[in-house]
Length: 306
Image (cartoon, helix red, strand yellow):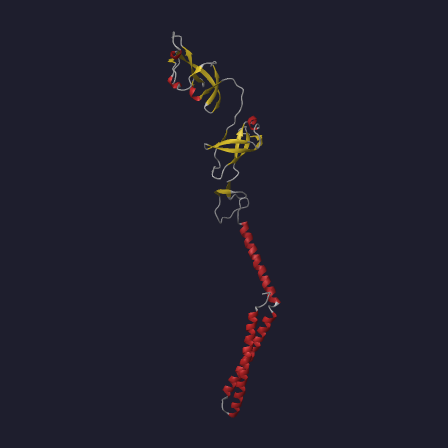
């Protein structure tokens, strides 16, 4: 609009004015002839009036065409340009208001996550501070584990540890060790950042287990779990072989032993091994498995497995 009408539009308006001028010349000639005919009585007054009216109409159309041509030639009026600019500003303000309402109605998660719980439906009226969604972060998963104070502070921040989740082992980095003791569990919370591949899906809320190796100075004997049997007063026992007094002149491969029960106390458990202490003596022969098949005082014979 500010650039004005196209040159083709102005040329068309000029051609229209020229055409009307030629029509007016023809109408004037016809009107002069009709006047002469009317004086001679050859035509009626009505025919003369029609010719005069045609001349007046063409003059008015020529005047209208010239005004339109002048308007096109001079370009768009400044008042109209100002009015259109004001209309554009009004429309821009409306668009900005709509965009603002959309922005206020759009919730954006501050991190890569998935919706776990939606507490309100679309279109509901809510109050300030009301919880709308519960988000679960899909990246940078953290594991919080409570450890005894001495054990927790032996860990090195930034160090790596192995976690077991649902029978799978994951590598984790010690992010932080909280500087306070939990009042309910009396443990220190250690935060570990889980390192997972995109293919590994770990559900939030699963139980993670941290395996730590601790060196403890304790005297005892390591025995497999299969060698222990329940005893009285909450103790455990194992069976040892004591050389029988009933044998005489027996060869090394045909020696007799008496099964003897020894009570033990379980100190620590590590996998399938237990550290125990009790009445065991060095160099005792301990039955490692199948303890349910033996009773104290039973005589057994040594055999060599080939």
